[in-house]
Structures are given as structure tokens and as C-alpha cells.
Amino acid sequence: MKTGEIAALQKEYLMPTYAPGIALVEGSGASVWDAEGNEYLDFVSGIAVTNIGHCHPKMIHAIQDQVETLVHVSNLYYNEKQPLLAKALAERSSLPGAKCFFCNSGAEANEGLIKLARLWGSEHGKYEVITMRQSFHGRTLATLTATGQEKVQIGFGPLPEGFVYANFNDLQSVEDSISSKTAAVLVEALQGEGGVIPANPEFLSGLRKLCDEKGILLLCDEVQCGMGRTGKWFGFQSYDLQPDAFSLAKGLGNGFPIGAIVAGSTLADIFQPGHHATTFGGTPLACSAALAVIDVIDSEELLANTMMMGAYFVEGLCDIAQKHKKWIAEVRGLGLLLGLVLDVPSAALQKKLQEKGMLALATAGNTLRLLPPLNVSQEEIEQALQLIGEACEELHEEMAALSPNPCQCGMGE
Ligand SMILES: *Cc1c(COP(=O)(O)O)cnc(C)c1O
Image 1 (cartoon, rainbow, N blue to C red):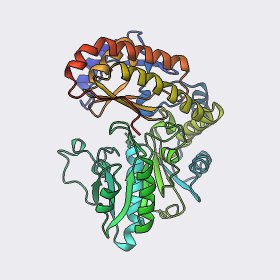
Image 2 (cartoon, rainbow, N blue to C red):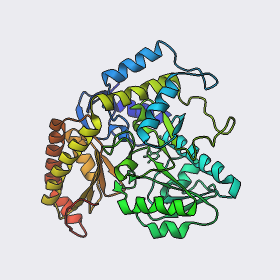
Image 3 (cartoon, protein in one colour):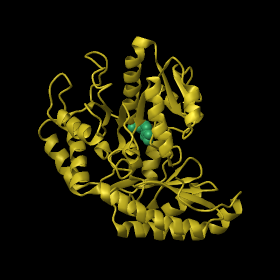
Image 4 (cartoon, helix red, strand yellow):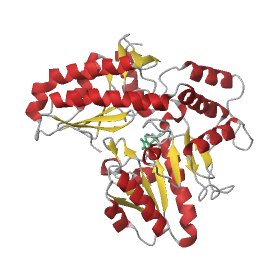
């Protein structure tokens, strides 16, 4: 089918929750192809999901082998892939006594994390969760309420009780939000959907101290910044932080749906039989996919590659920002979770790049989010810089005319 046909079919039969422009039919590494055969450099990676690139051979073999052996048995029975994956995540988390629960998505992982915090606090009447403004935690009723953005909440009330919002990177604001009912603080080490905003180190270390003093849990949403995206296994490790528990999804299965809660010793044994469950969570197939992802990140040294390619990309982006400082404000992020922050809306730049054969993500109005796979090569980064540079040249007059306040370029941290 060609794009026009697919679009017409979609318009008739799919709820219009998304408004796609191109139809993708094939992928390999950092490249994807549309229904007309055009190639794109994919710096969206399915929104930080295909971290080891499209159709990695180890991923293909792991899934193929498992499909031919056993796909699903339910959690009523042991399936060895589950504890093997849990062990791999627990070891990499560096949380003492860590244990996992597997589910199917980021929202489901966060929903479970919230339940875990509430069950922990229930003895002492603590149930409130403090989350950050501009955060993103998912689209279920509890997680859209946890999300500190009104745009995802409007029309869905009444919202569940027990969520309080504080300002990201503002420790005083969190402290002011604490009450005798506070069970936990939930935070992203780097706000992805909120505009690629890294936490300040003092904010996270201050949060840990504050939570310890007040007897409150510190939870991290690692759905986007986990699994190597920031150059460490988990985003909080970029800050030497130890949360009490964290959630994972997106990059965990490289596109095979799987989410997880990883909890340190305080929370590892709170859920007992009957407290929490999910039919599809941690199937042999999903866990095999995630085990292949971990194997590839280890054996191809992708954490090191993420740091190296991230630094190289930032350097090139800063040069571009400097040339267009009338309308580009800064480059920020960690590892390969980067944002080119404009003083003007970023949609036109995204569109121009797509026309040139590169996919990037317009986020939070004025930010271009760049998420190459973690095994991206230097040549591919150079190609991206070339395309972004050209697109910025071509848009310069238009964007400069829109710009309200020209400002200096530099790393945001
Ligand atoms: C994408 C995302 C979620 C939601 O994950 P889903 O799999 O779409 O439910 C939650 N938290 C963060 C930080 C995310 O980026």
C-alpha cells in the first residue's frame, strides 16, 4: 500500500489520536524507509524505544528462537527468562536487594509504582505522591494525574485524589508540598517530554536528603531516560542518586512491549500475592527481547558509545546554535537524549528535516528532541549535523523574524 491508501484506511477505522504524515514500512539500524521507498535517518527511535536500532540481528534471533519455543504461560508458572531478566536489571540498578515486577508499558509501570508507594504508606495514612510540573508519566487515569501538565488532564475529571505538584529543579517547592499524608516524590532525572530538561545535581541530592529526613519514598520514572539513553544504565546514575524504586519501559524491549518496576530493599517485598498482577507481564517472549537488549548494550559497549557520540553531537549542535543564535537558545540534555531549544516553535524545523530525510521530534513547543539509537555511528551523527545545519540555513530568515528574544548558546546545565 502507498501512503495515501494507508492514510485513507486509517482515517476511516482508527480513532484520530495521532496525526501521522508518512508511513514507515522497514527499518535497519538508524535508518527507516517509507511506503514510497524514501530513506530517513531515524533520530526519533520510536520515542527512545529502539535504542539498539531497528532489526538488530541479536534481537531478531532472540525473538525468533523464543517464538518457536514458548510465547506465554501466565505468571501462575515459573518462566526462567523472568528471574534472569530481573537479576540483570537488579545488578545494573546498584540498588541493594533490588527486585522487579514486569508489566507492559510505561504507564502501567508507573501505575504500579504509585500502588507500591500507597501500599507502603497505607499503615501510616500516607498516600500522596508529589510529582513535578512539566513531567510526563503516562495516560492512564492515575498517571495522567501524576503528569504535571494540564493538557493531558482536561476533560477527564474527576481525577484520582492524592497527587500534588511541585516545580522541577526547585527543592523548596517540593519541601513546601510535603504534608503528613505524603508517601513519595516521583521525578524524572531528565524530563524528556517536558522539553529535554535535565535535573540539577543539587536538586536530586537535596531531594534524597529531604525524603530521608521526612521518611518519604523517592521514586524515579526511568521510562524514557533509562536503559542507557543518558550514557548510564539509568538516568539517576548520572547523578549518583539511589532512588527507592524506579520504572522502566520504552527502551527495555527495543520495541517489544515490556515495562518494569525495579525496587530496592525498602519496597522489594511490599507487594504480596494478590496485591498486584498483569496477564501479559514478563512473558518468555518479552523477557527474551529485553535480555537481548541488555546483551547488546553490554557486548557492543553502547554506554560508552552513547557518551562519546552524545558529546560529539552536542559540539556540532552548539556550532549550529551559535550560527543561528537569533532564534536558537541552547543545546541541552544527557548522553543521546538531546534537545535543540529554540526561541520559536520547533515544528517548522522538524518538518524541514523530514523533507530532507531525517526524523526528529518537536517537543514542548520550542524544542527539537534528538534521540538517535545508542549504536549510532559518527558518520550518522555527521550526516544529521549536515541536515540540521542545512535546514537551519534554509529557515533562518523565517525563524529570525519570529524570534522574540535572541539569546546566547551554551549547555543548559
Ligand atoms: C513515554 C513515557 C511514559 C509512558 O509510557 P507508555 O509506554 O506510553 O505508557 C511514562 N513516563 C515517561 C517519562 C515517558 O517518557
